[in-house]
Length: 101
Image (tube, rainbow, N blue to C red; front, side, top):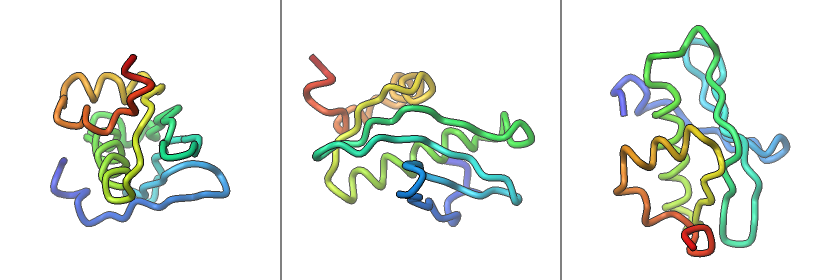
């Protein structure tokens, strides 16, 4: 993760079912659906002004850390999350068993 994003908080906006991270006044998101023991990650969105700066990777990694710390598995339905997992297979331990089948 880019060092400039490490100290930024990941906000769990449960009302909107999404994680948020604010960078330079712009909000990036990962939409999710809460399931028993799992988070289905549906969509990642980064404002155009922040594209290409590593923001999407940072919010995905922060979301994975949230899942790990809260002992929940992930169901990666978002195309960006799937690409991220291919590049970072160390996170595959978080994938829900039913999704691996």
